[in-house]
Length: 457
Image (cartoon, rainbow, N blue to C red; front, side, top):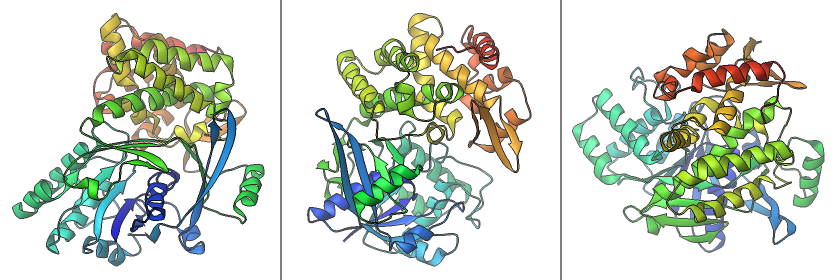
């Protein structure tokens, strides 16, 4: 038996990673996934009610025809709340059959806080929790693990290891443990690619999927047929991660950078640049945006002029991938809600768009017009944040949406502090964005125009 511990119970991991291990089991493998709830928020009741079983439905267009394929997922052996049941959680650390840890804690999840205390659990970061888990495994005298973070940050596993190393030093943990972590654990950078819209919200789709599955499934999740998992080849990982098509396509590679850069900049960068504009123009889903001629052209022009030329030397290959991405955005089944993609938009823009922005600026000596517009819509959206009943919300055409991001950012805008100062803050962006000539002035002028009712796309 090959056991996998998974930090995160969200739709993406269940529609991607769990679908993969489930497919391997159908092919004769022996995998068991234990989900660990990474934060106190949320409930695991639906997992208990359904005995940890659920379905995914992959919906899309293939060879010109609509497809809807249902896959029962039964690879989950346990779903653990470590805050309520730490004994079961730490028992995994002492299980010799555990070989893999997968995580998805968003771009903001892999971080280091020098105020984290070893005796704490609830209030510390994911890397801090992981350090404590690995230390328990070290004390049990067991071999190391393969750590496969799927968070969409540059060199995600390298960054995760950097944080773990920092916690080992912060907490003055034994040198033998630091050496064990260095030699025994394999931190493998990864790239994931599948658009997942998650659980349907409208009653018509819910009823349709209930009929398709044969019964109601409170955990059903919708994704697209396309799926790619590129994993850095380290150690004996090929013993545990099988290449080829297993619900998703899996590649073990020594050059994860190419896959990561292409996906993050082209697909995720397009999403992040589009979402604030779509929300501010009254759209609800990516599909709604792509059916709007102006917004569709905005996406395509941004890709062609400001993103594709800076992904790799093979512009033709990048262009083909970008065309496939726009086709995927036009998948009528996904119902990929803009509010879902908008989670942690500040860190997402920094990770997904700023690198392309900088490459364009370096090559052309001026700010990229389309990404500047996208960023302007982001700042216009955040400038509308107000605190209401303990939540942070922003008014967009026809509705009010809840904004979810790092608390300091939400507070900053709720207090109506200057956009320009926020753009200049290296603590937010890693640099001062006013260094890009004309950027701050263009954004401020654009935000004023947007708030005055003008459409910039």
